[in-house]
Image 1: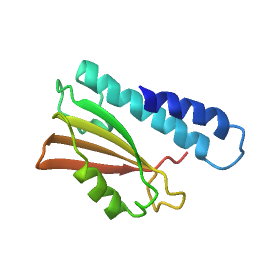
Image 2: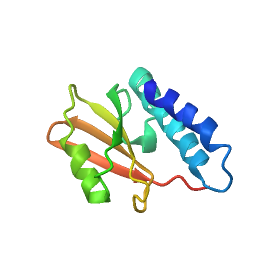
Image 3: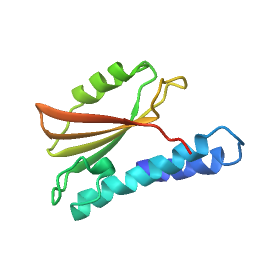
Length: 124
């Protein structure tokens, strides 16, 4: 979807910069986006296998606002997002340049009360 296209455009820009690792982050985000979409349409292969087999969740990709600057703030932000349907699979990427430890989040919610949030780091 739009998220994957945006990441592909970013990849073109980031690939021209050497040794930043930002191009690799784009590649990981693209791969995770495709895994989310595959789960949505085929019911398997979700990122980190966090979605039960045969379940076809709605997929949402979000950019976390700049004021979300910690893992706890990101978890709170993602948990409080309105999800128009359940189950839901959310792919969130921080926009704050110095976000600590992780490069993004994948969250799965089967109901408004239940959400599992996983951070990932895009390292070679």
